[in-house]
Image 1 (cartoon, rainbow, N blue to C red):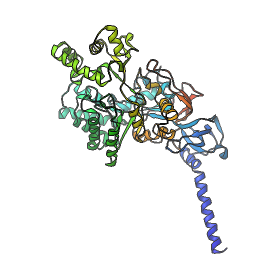
Image 2 (cartoon, rainbow, N blue to C red; image 1 turned 180 degrees about the vertical axis):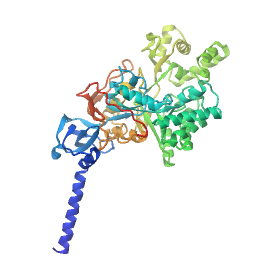
Image 3 (cartoon, helix red, strand yellow; image 1 turned 30 degrees about the horizontal axis):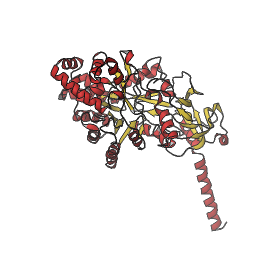
Length: 533
């Protein structure tokens, strides 16, 4: 054999070897991941368009599942792989299950009637996070274990809460903690992190957390940082109540810098007439932080209304310091009452006026479905006086219409902004967030692409939360898989917030079908996910 022939032969052999390795990585990885060969599968999804969560372009491929793992993504017919159940996904998209980093499902998942989490499964969500806004427990691990033992329809992970911790130590006081009290708070964070919390969450807009100064938050965040946790924050101000939106972003960035902890803003928005159009300024601040080496991300829901209450949206923070009895005393004091009404009127202006607040839940059920303007007109009273009366007689949850489509779209286009529902009772977000984003912003308005939307609802979120082997359609990853079509639609409204979404045909949670041909089947395949697992 001549030298040239030898070189040609060698080159051909190397090319063939490379081609073989490229062609077979999924089957090899599958065998390594499962410790078996591919002579049988539990579920095989064929003929679908795979959007794998990486952000890459969709492609035609089949997805094989064995046990709780994806064992290959490729051409099943070429590999001659049999399966116990084959799903024909012709004309549909196959994607990783969505991950919601901000929900209020703590009690729902503990109740037998709602633990299947159908409202999220029908959105294509396979993992949810609880303990947000500073309300997570200290004993995170115990709470997660209880949920898994009871059975849950989706995976669940959790934060410990700054509000819970400060409330246990200082109650509704506005005092600065003593050294001993701060040591107690630190120990609580340490306990939560050792039990598997994702990190620490705050709701600095809400009392008693709003009474805390930044250094206290930094000190507790340092503890979470030592365990590789993240700082998840509902900002101190998303409008112009106190420090302002920009000031609140600056505070979050300061906490990240000084505690050496990744920052996740829940939820990023420009709330109220005073800050409409400031999304550009916020984005510039975050991008500058990225250039300095900081890890800063956020989540967002695709609605113009936030979920709040008359109390949270209208009462100034000074008025609620000390708790309900202190508030009542201030209302009874003529001088403080006058100041309170003045501040409440300004807060109502920030929110866009009485027509912008729609009651979604109240002790007086006759108020539900009415705006503050409607209630005030029926009572022939001033909206602010009427709102204060409602607060004194049990309060009311509201949808506050105070954001613009332009700011929502601007934030949504950012690669560091992921999808999060902030799902709470009375709000359509709890039943429609993920389908709404796809239907409205991908398939209708074309604000973002499908691969971008899927990535920022799955793999990017898993990366932020440090959830290993979830969020991608890849061999060896957990088999959280969804099949949906381009008709995916949210149906929940502010008047009927519990209507289920449609368009998600199949959902696998840890390899088990939980939605089959569009129907929930009662399977409770969810798991408790702890930071160190």
